[in-house]
Image (tube, rainbow, N blue to C red; front, side, top):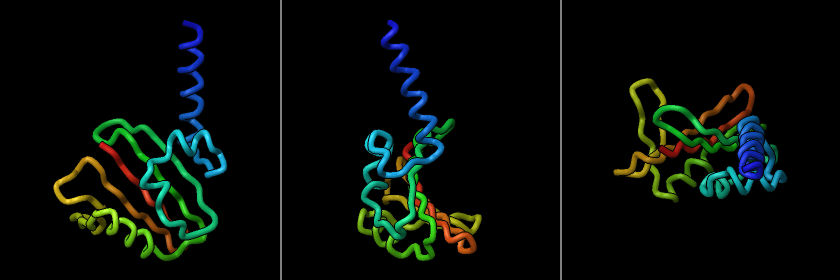
Length: 125
């Protein structure tokens, strides 16, 4: 019983670190928490890190790569198209990427041109 409690506490600690952000060199976090499609995303900057989170509500899992010093999203958009995703605009001037007929996974690309930061986020429902 003590071992089970220790494992649960260790997992909670690791989850907290994953939510704050981590580099690819943090192998345990990288291999445990980064989604495969996020792992395979093109690196559009040499300065990047990952985040992972369990969400409440309709989107229980989020995996993200954040690129600093990046200004162009074309390589990420081409990557999503190659995976079979298509851009779906919404009424608020934004949009997301999904596979036709599948709403269990969505990608979002967020960009701040002023700060030169780009996020590629995958939500799995």
